[in-house]
Length: 277
Image (cartoon, rainbow, N blue to C red; front, side, top):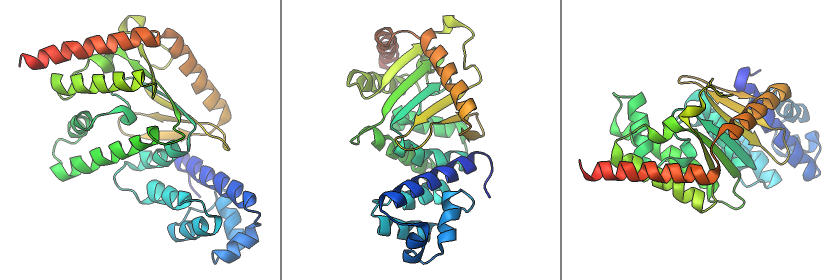
Protein backbone atom coordinates (compact mmCIF):
# COMPACT_ATOMS: atom_id res chain seq x y z
CA UNK A 1 0.00 0.00 0.00
CA UNK A 2 1.33 3.45 -0.87
CA UNK A 3 1.37 6.38 1.50
CA UNK A 4 1.37 10.17 1.32
CA UNK A 5 1.52 11.78 -2.08
CA UNK A 6 2.25 8.48 -3.84
CA UNK A 7 -1.14 7.17 -2.75
CA UNK A 8 -2.87 10.06 -4.53
CA UNK A 9 -1.19 9.10 -7.79
CA UNK A 10 -2.04 5.40 -7.40
CA UNK A 11 -5.64 6.49 -6.93
CA UNK A 12 -5.47 8.59 -10.08
CA UNK A 13 -4.11 5.56 -12.00
CA UNK A 14 -6.98 3.47 -10.62
CA UNK A 15 -9.62 6.06 -11.48
CA UNK A 16 -8.38 6.34 -15.05
CA UNK A 17 -8.16 2.55 -15.41
CA UNK A 18 -11.73 2.04 -14.16
CA UNK A 19 -13.10 4.78 -16.41
CA UNK A 20 -11.40 3.50 -19.54
CA UNK A 21 -12.14 -0.15 -18.79
CA UNK A 22 -15.85 0.56 -18.38
CA UNK A 23 -15.88 2.73 -21.50
CA UNK A 24 -14.49 -0.26 -23.40
CA UNK A 25 -17.26 -2.48 -22.00
CA UNK A 26 -14.98 -4.82 -20.01
CA UNK A 27 -15.51 -6.20 -16.54
CA UNK A 28 -12.50 -6.50 -14.27
CA UNK A 29 -12.41 -10.21 -15.02
CA UNK A 30 -12.62 -9.59 -18.78
CA UNK A 31 -9.66 -7.21 -18.73
CA UNK A 32 -7.69 -9.38 -16.31
CA UNK A 33 -7.97 -12.43 -18.57
CA UNK A 34 -6.68 -10.44 -21.52
CA UNK A 35 -3.62 -9.11 -19.66
CA UNK A 36 -2.90 -12.43 -17.89
CA UNK A 37 -3.91 -11.48 -14.35
CA UNK A 38 -7.05 -12.05 -12.29
CA UNK A 39 -10.00 -9.71 -12.17
CA UNK A 40 -9.24 -9.18 -8.49
CA UNK A 41 -5.76 -8.00 -9.47
CA UNK A 42 -7.30 -5.37 -11.76
CA UNK A 43 -9.60 -4.40 -8.91
CA UNK A 44 -6.58 -3.83 -6.66
CA UNK A 45 -5.14 -1.43 -9.25
CA UNK A 46 -8.44 0.42 -9.45
CA UNK A 47 -8.71 0.65 -5.66
CA UNK A 48 -5.09 1.88 -5.38
CA UNK A 49 -4.16 -1.12 -3.24
CA UNK A 50 -1.47 -2.46 -5.57
CA UNK A 51 1.40 -0.51 -7.12
CA UNK A 52 1.02 -0.12 -10.91
CA UNK A 53 3.40 -2.40 -12.82
CA UNK A 54 4.96 -1.49 -16.15
CA UNK A 55 4.48 -4.79 -18.01
CA UNK A 56 0.82 -5.03 -17.04
CA UNK A 57 0.26 -1.34 -17.78
CA UNK A 58 1.65 -1.85 -21.28
CA UNK A 59 -0.71 -4.78 -21.92
CA UNK A 60 -3.66 -2.75 -20.59
CA UNK A 61 -2.81 0.03 -23.05
CA UNK A 62 -2.79 -2.49 -25.89
CA UNK A 63 -6.12 -4.06 -24.95
CA UNK A 64 -7.92 -0.79 -24.16
CA UNK A 65 -6.20 1.08 -27.02
CA UNK A 66 -5.29 3.98 -24.71
CA UNK A 67 -2.31 5.30 -26.66
CA UNK A 68 0.24 4.36 -24.02
CA UNK A 69 -1.20 6.38 -21.15
CA UNK A 70 -0.82 3.67 -18.49
CA UNK A 71 2.70 2.79 -19.62
CA UNK A 72 3.64 6.48 -19.44
CA UNK A 73 2.13 6.76 -15.99
CA UNK A 74 4.34 3.92 -14.79
CA UNK A 75 7.45 5.24 -16.49
CA UNK A 76 6.97 8.77 -15.23
CA UNK A 77 5.74 7.95 -11.75
CA UNK A 78 7.91 4.94 -10.97
CA UNK A 79 10.94 4.62 -13.22
CA UNK A 80 11.89 8.09 -14.43
CA UNK A 81 15.11 8.97 -12.56
CA UNK A 82 15.29 12.43 -14.14
CA UNK A 83 12.86 13.74 -11.56
CA UNK A 84 13.01 13.78 -7.78
CA UNK A 85 10.93 10.98 -6.30
CA UNK A 86 8.46 13.44 -4.83
CA UNK A 87 7.96 15.21 -8.17
CA UNK A 88 7.97 12.42 -10.75
CA UNK A 89 4.33 11.66 -10.04
CA UNK A 90 3.31 15.23 -10.88
CA UNK A 91 4.71 15.08 -14.41
CA UNK A 92 2.11 12.69 -15.80
CA UNK A 93 -0.67 14.41 -13.89
CA UNK A 94 0.23 17.61 -15.76
CA UNK A 95 -0.20 15.70 -19.02
CA UNK A 96 -3.73 14.72 -18.06
CA UNK A 97 -4.83 18.02 -16.54
CA UNK A 98 -7.33 20.27 -18.27
CA UNK A 99 -6.40 23.25 -16.08
CA UNK A 100 -3.25 24.05 -14.11
CA UNK A 101 -3.00 26.96 -11.67
CA UNK A 102 0.41 27.64 -10.15
CA UNK A 103 1.88 30.10 -7.68
CA UNK A 104 5.64 30.58 -7.92
CA UNK A 105 7.19 32.41 -4.95
CA UNK A 106 10.90 31.89 -5.64
CA UNK A 107 11.64 30.60 -9.17
CA UNK A 108 9.71 30.50 -12.42
CA UNK A 109 7.54 27.39 -12.98
CA UNK A 110 9.33 24.63 -14.87
CA UNK A 111 6.68 24.79 -17.60
CA UNK A 112 7.86 28.34 -18.41
CA UNK A 113 11.62 28.02 -18.01
CA UNK A 114 14.12 28.49 -20.82
CA UNK A 115 17.01 26.04 -21.12
CA UNK A 116 19.51 28.58 -19.76
CA UNK A 117 17.34 29.47 -16.77
CA UNK A 118 16.65 25.79 -16.02
CA UNK A 119 20.37 25.05 -16.20
CA UNK A 120 21.19 27.88 -13.79
CA UNK A 121 18.58 26.66 -11.29
CA UNK A 122 19.88 23.08 -11.55
CA UNK A 123 23.49 24.09 -10.96
CA UNK A 124 22.53 26.33 -8.04
CA UNK A 125 20.92 23.36 -6.30
CA UNK A 126 23.62 20.86 -7.38
CA UNK A 127 26.96 22.69 -7.66
CA UNK A 128 29.15 19.58 -7.96
CA UNK A 129 27.29 17.61 -10.64
CA UNK A 130 28.48 16.89 -14.18
CA UNK A 131 27.42 18.75 -17.31
CA UNK A 132 25.66 15.56 -18.40
CA UNK A 133 23.55 15.59 -15.24
CA UNK A 134 22.58 19.22 -15.81
CA UNK A 135 21.69 18.59 -19.45
CA UNK A 136 19.56 15.59 -18.52
CA UNK A 137 17.57 17.64 -16.03
CA UNK A 138 17.18 20.55 -18.43
CA UNK A 139 16.01 18.26 -21.23
CA UNK A 140 13.44 16.64 -18.93
CA UNK A 141 12.13 20.06 -17.91
CA UNK A 142 11.79 21.23 -21.50
CA UNK A 143 10.00 18.00 -22.43
CA UNK A 144 7.35 18.77 -19.81
CA UNK A 145 6.54 21.96 -21.69
CA UNK A 146 5.20 20.00 -24.67
CA UNK A 147 1.82 19.86 -22.94
CA UNK A 148 1.40 23.58 -23.63
CA UNK A 149 1.85 22.98 -27.35
CA UNK A 150 -0.55 20.09 -27.70
CA UNK A 151 -4.18 20.03 -28.69
CA UNK A 152 -5.99 20.46 -26.48
CA UNK A 153 -3.52 22.18 -24.19
CA UNK A 154 -4.50 22.76 -20.56
CA UNK A 155 -5.43 26.21 -19.36
CA UNK A 156 -2.34 27.45 -17.55
CA UNK A 157 -2.75 30.15 -14.93
CA UNK A 158 0.41 31.43 -13.25
CA UNK A 159 0.89 33.88 -10.39
CA UNK A 160 4.48 35.03 -9.84
CA UNK A 161 5.80 36.87 -6.84
CA UNK A 162 7.69 39.99 -7.92
CA UNK A 163 10.87 38.52 -6.41
CA UNK A 164 10.77 35.84 -9.12
CA UNK A 165 10.74 38.50 -11.83
CA UNK A 166 13.59 40.53 -10.34
CA UNK A 167 16.02 37.87 -9.08
CA UNK A 168 18.84 37.59 -11.71
CA UNK A 169 18.98 33.81 -12.05
CA UNK A 170 21.83 32.99 -14.41
CA UNK A 171 22.72 36.65 -14.86
CA UNK A 172 21.19 39.57 -16.79
CA UNK A 173 21.31 37.95 -20.24
CA UNK A 174 19.61 34.77 -19.08
CA UNK A 175 16.95 36.74 -17.21
CA UNK A 176 16.26 39.06 -20.11
CA UNK A 177 15.66 36.08 -22.40
CA UNK A 178 13.61 34.29 -19.74
CA UNK A 179 11.28 37.20 -19.07
CA UNK A 180 10.89 37.88 -22.79
CA UNK A 181 9.92 34.23 -23.19
CA UNK A 182 7.26 34.50 -20.49
CA UNK A 183 5.94 37.74 -21.99
CA UNK A 184 5.76 36.10 -25.41
CA UNK A 185 3.74 33.17 -24.09
CA UNK A 186 1.39 35.58 -22.34
CA UNK A 187 0.89 37.65 -25.49
CA UNK A 188 0.19 34.45 -27.44
CA UNK A 189 -2.40 33.59 -24.76
CA UNK A 190 -0.65 30.30 -24.04
CA UNK A 191 -0.50 31.24 -20.37
CA UNK A 192 -2.31 33.69 -18.09
CA UNK A 193 0.25 35.51 -15.94
CA UNK A 194 -0.14 37.85 -12.98
CA UNK A 195 2.47 39.26 -10.61
CA UNK A 196 2.07 39.85 -6.88
CA UNK A 197 4.05 43.02 -6.12
CA UNK A 198 6.34 43.12 -3.10
CA UNK A 199 4.36 46.01 -1.68
CA UNK A 200 1.41 43.67 -1.03
CA UNK A 201 3.31 42.33 1.98
CA UNK A 202 1.67 39.33 3.64
CA UNK A 203 -0.41 37.18 1.33
CA UNK A 204 -2.46 33.99 1.39
CA UNK A 205 0.28 31.62 0.19
CA UNK A 206 3.35 32.71 2.11
CA UNK A 207 3.99 29.04 2.86
CA UNK A 208 5.44 28.34 -0.57
CA UNK A 209 4.77 26.99 -4.04
CA UNK A 210 1.30 25.68 -4.94
CA UNK A 211 -0.06 23.95 -8.01
CA UNK A 212 -3.73 23.11 -8.55
CA UNK A 213 -4.79 20.65 -11.26
CA UNK A 214 -8.22 19.88 -12.68
CA UNK A 215 -9.18 16.87 -14.83
CA UNK A 216 -12.07 15.80 -17.04
CA UNK A 217 -12.91 12.58 -15.26
CA UNK A 218 -11.15 12.80 -11.89
CA UNK A 219 -11.36 15.09 -8.86
CA UNK A 220 -8.97 18.04 -8.59
CA UNK A 221 -5.60 17.74 -6.89
CA UNK A 222 -3.17 20.13 -5.23
CA UNK A 223 0.61 19.90 -5.16
CA UNK A 224 2.78 21.77 -2.69
CA UNK A 225 6.55 21.87 -2.64
CA UNK A 226 9.42 23.02 -0.45
CA UNK A 227 13.13 22.99 -1.29
CA UNK A 228 13.51 19.29 -0.51
CA UNK A 229 10.11 17.64 -0.75
CA UNK A 230 6.72 17.83 -2.37
CA UNK A 231 3.25 16.46 -1.66
CA UNK A 232 0.28 15.65 -3.87
CA UNK A 233 -2.93 16.34 -1.95
CA UNK A 234 -6.28 14.77 -2.87
CA UNK A 235 -8.30 15.42 0.29
CA UNK A 236 -11.27 17.44 -1.08
CA UNK A 237 -11.41 19.74 1.95
CA UNK A 238 -7.71 20.56 1.74
CA UNK A 239 -7.85 21.06 -2.03
CA UNK A 240 -10.78 23.44 -1.54
CA UNK A 241 -8.78 25.46 1.01
CA UNK A 242 -5.82 25.60 -1.35
CA UNK A 243 -8.05 26.84 -4.18
CA UNK A 244 -9.46 29.56 -1.92
CA UNK A 245 -5.93 30.67 -0.99
CA UNK A 246 -5.07 30.83 -4.69
CA UNK A 247 -8.16 32.97 -5.34
CA UNK A 248 -7.12 35.34 -2.56
CA UNK A 249 -3.66 35.62 -4.06
CA UNK A 250 -5.09 36.30 -7.50
CA UNK A 251 -7.08 39.13 -5.97
CA UNK A 252 -3.88 40.62 -4.54
CA UNK A 253 -1.98 40.41 -7.83
CA UNK A 254 -1.62 43.06 -10.49
CA UNK A 255 -3.93 42.80 -13.50
CA UNK A 256 -2.60 40.69 -16.39
CA UNK A 257 -1.98 43.88 -18.38
CA UNK A 258 -0.06 45.58 -15.57
CA UNK A 259 1.81 42.34 -14.87
CA UNK A 260 2.90 42.04 -18.48
CA UNK A 261 4.06 45.65 -18.47
CA UNK A 262 6.14 44.96 -15.35
CA UNK A 263 7.66 41.78 -16.79
CA UNK A 264 8.62 43.48 -20.05
CA UNK A 265 10.02 46.49 -18.21
CA UNK A 266 12.24 44.32 -15.99
CA UNK A 267 13.32 42.31 -19.06
CA UNK A 268 14.38 45.53 -20.72
CA UNK A 269 16.36 46.52 -17.63
CA UNK A 270 18.14 43.15 -17.65
CA UNK A 271 18.79 43.52 -21.38
CA UNK A 272 20.42 46.92 -20.86
CA UNK A 273 22.49 45.56 -17.99
CA UNK A 274 23.66 42.63 -20.11
CA UNK A 275 24.74 44.93 -22.94
CA UNK A 276 27.02 46.91 -20.62
CA UNK A 277 28.84 43.92 -19.13
